[in-house]
Length: 305
Image (cartoon, rainbow, N blue to C red):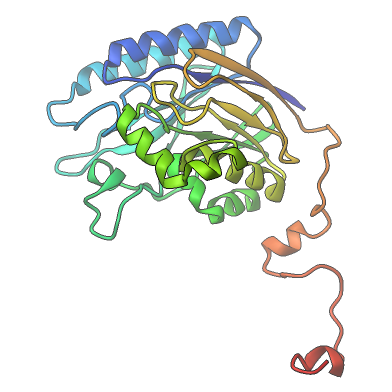
């Protein structure tokens, strides 16, 4: 089975109407180029707290709802699956979820993934948790017979999520990011923390620029899963949107600060390298070795030569 994925990026901001215009235009272009799925960055419609939006006090929820419903209708008109980053309002006094709306090619909102691991310290008053309420579920859905899952940004630090999705048969992960809209001075501090002497050894110069692509490569290869990784392109962005094959090979990447679409094809019939195929199911079941174990005295005595 094949699926065409459009990983879309643009400079997200606090301007909901401006974000809406970008999303709708990119959706139309993606469909014109034959995409089955348009995949967007984290909080791309609403703006991302602290980076795009200082706070949600006085936030225009009505405008966000109106724009969301218009995009759901547009997805149906275009017959285009759309994975849309936004925030989801909860009842007062609770903070909103940081979410991905899963919109089908029939213009139906079929599910919503809420970011499970919002960054913070134990006080729950810093980072994401100063603005968002964490989610409590996975989202698994089928597009043209291919099992898909959804994750958001900081979730990448928790490989347990990828393994749990793999247990549920997920073949394609739609992992949205916002590692962008960083002002020059904080960006320079991030680069200094990595160490200028280490920049030449890494693909990026910041922690997000180094660890996020590397972790996606590892996740794809260890779970034999396709991964779409769109990111905001607002300056400064830590990396441009990219796509990873099931063997851990990045097959395309956009520039950091462009408005663009990366088109990629998922082909579940492709014969791609998978060194753990024979043992993965057993590993997921908790059997953490390959082959057959033996009971031998020389094996059991671990302090003898």
